[in-house]
Structure formats: structure tokens, C-alpha cells
Amino acid sequence: MLIREGDVNDAQVLAGLLGDLDYPNTPEAIAERIVVMAANPDSRLLVAENEGRAVGFISLHFIPQIALAGEFCRISYLCVSSESRGEGIGQQLLDEAERLKGWPATVAVTGWKFTAIRAVSARTCFMPARNMRNRLSI
Image 1 (tube, rainbow, N blue to C red):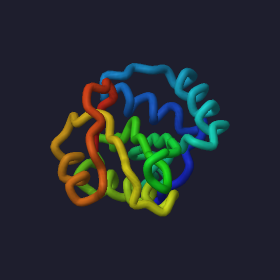
Image 2: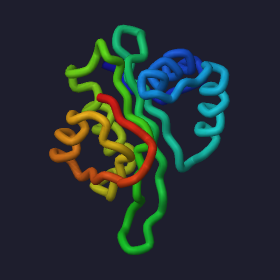
Image 3: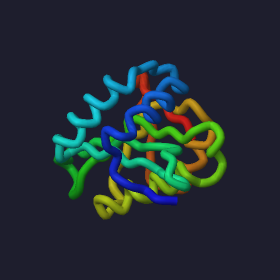
């Protein structure tokens, strides 16, 4: 399993994964958003690749904190393809996100669509951000 930075070449797969979460998009629209994220130093898009094929992603946004050292990380999307769920890919994406900034830090996870994210968050330092539209799928 390779965890790498996402790029516009991932737009087709990400559009499909987002469609699975009831966020229908065109690959062109996703490619535009990937370019915007890549230009923002406080955003990261990580893609999980298995045998040369993207099978999941995590979208991260880092926010400076006033009360604590370090940054607050908002996970806006975490999705693994249905055929790859249960293989630990979501956890690998979370582990890589944690490694990026040398956490532990406070992390908000937007949405609780599947039980699996609750199990992952119970093992790590993640907390839910209530009343947000975004959904998770791992």
C-alpha cells in the first residue's frame, strides 16, 4: 500500500468515491478543487494506492490553535472504495495524516456515517465535529 499526495490524475477516482458518499461530482470539478488544495499550504490530499490503483483518500485542513501548541486538523473527507474496505486502508490514511504534523493534536472528524470510523477514532485522538454535512466511509 502506497500513501501519496493526491493530484489531478486522481480526479476520476475521487469523483467516483465522492459519488458513493452522495456527493456527485464530475472529474473536471474535482480536478479544479485538487489544484486549489495543492496551492493551499494548510490543506493536504492523501491518496491510498494499491497495485497502481487509487482505492481511498483523506482530505485534511490544518488550523492554528490559540490555546494549545500545534495545529487543529479537520478531516473533511475520508473514503475507501467499497471493495477495499476492511483492509485497514482508512487506518493507514489516518496514520499518515498523524505523521505529517507530528501529532498528537486535536482532530475533528466531520460526520459519522459508518461504525468503522468510530472504532478507528476510539483507538486514536479523534473527536467528532457535530452537525456537519461531510461524511466518512472506511
